[in-house]
Structure formats: C-alpha cells, structure tokens
Length: 309
Image: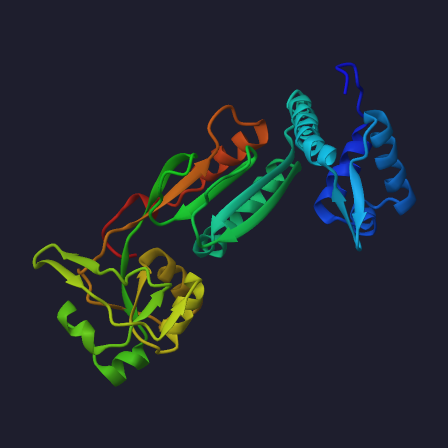
C-alpha cells in the first residue's frame, strides 16, 4: 500500500459497513444503494489495495487478515473526513450540524421538554438527537452533551455543576391514612419502602436542623424501579414511602395535585447534584451553543439546597 494511494470514500464507507453487518444485502439496504453497486465498490477497493479484504464463510462475509488490518485505517480515514466536514461547516455564518443531548430521565419532561423548542427555533440548521438515561455516562462524542442527576465519578469528561435538587420522603395520602404518618425517622421501619434500583440500600443519612442526624437503613423494597417517574407513580399508588426530589414532586403536583405528601419535613438527605458533562477541548459552535443554552435555562430553585418547594 503506497503512500500515494488515493481512496474513494464511497468505497471506504461500503467496506466499513459490510464489516459491521457481515452482509452485502443488509448494508445495501442501510446505505440505500444497489447490492451490485456495493459489491463493485468493495471490489474496486480490493483492486486498489491489491489484496482481498473479505471472504465468504457460510452466509456471512468475514474479513481476511488484510481486511482486519485495513479496517483500522479505514475507520480513521472516515473519521478524519467527518471531522474535516465539521471543521468546514464551522466556517459558515449560521450554526448547523448534528448535536446529541443525553439527559437524566427525571429531567427530560420536567425541564427540557418545553425549553428545547426554544433552542431549535434559535438555531434552525441544527439537528438535535435527545437520549434519556438513568445511569451516568462513561464516554461521549465531541458533539455530545450530558445532563446527569445524582453523584458522578471521574469519567474523562469535563464536569460542570448546574445546581442541586433537595430531597425528601414522600407517600400518598391513602397510604398514610391506612398505615399512619411517621413522626420520626425511627418509625420508618414500620413502613413499606419504594426504592430506585437500591440507591438507598447502603443506608440513608437524614439531617434535621434541630434534632441532628439519623441513619435510616431501609427495608428491602418489594418494588424497585429503574426510572424516577415509575418510582414516583408507585409511591402515588400507595405502594409505600420513598425518596424523591422536591422540585420534581412540585412539578407533578401542578398537574396531579394531592397525590403525594411530604413526610417528616425537616429531615433531609444530601441534595442531589445536577451536572453538565461534555468533552474536554475546543467545542464545535453547535455544541458551544447548546452548552450556553442549557446554562441559561437552569431554574432558580436549583440554586437552593434546603427548603422544599
């Protein structure tokens, strides 16, 4: 493979996609080209390199030794081409291109659902992909931004704190009418517990401005949800007592009043941090615009860590 070899990026894309699918048919459908066209592009690439890159095994195309080696370079070349296009698009006067926002599920509807329309209206050439998660990120692309609710850890990303959500214990009025209202944390052992994937299983430290601290070890939760909204729904359906952010319950009360009651007011756990995560280094204009927009949309209540809303 000489230094003067020139590559056709349609051929590189064809090879990279077939490496991923192992099938000319599936890749042709995905790339929206004829199967014969895709086959010809790969044959042209093999002729250019003077080496076979793929061979058929049963009903699947698998790489040769040369194919495995070249795939690494192929991936790098395609990434460089994409980055060059991004760099050139940055020279345009208008911000454009794709950007991905990954947000904690508890904040998606309560915070971002209405505000993102404003961002898209401000930047009509930007295409936004929104993903919701309830687990912290480990790695992001340079054009991705993540908003996480809860503790974070070192993950190779820039971490910028946007605020906090104070928390409290909640139950439904029907549940409290049937089981009684707790007046001190030591009475919580008499109640059913609704947990968010065991987050409080290691013990929950509750602090009171007058009565000090109490470590509550919740009983095993018969219902463990992996979404904050599902946990909130279960508490509202009288399944037991659970830990919820005050700001989120206040949002729910606006639409479904009277479903949740704050138990043991004054006894508060550590507030949950809200963190903006993004890649280090120079940001693209569209990513920079999204970061600036998210900072501008932080509710004033997130800046306070004590009283319930």
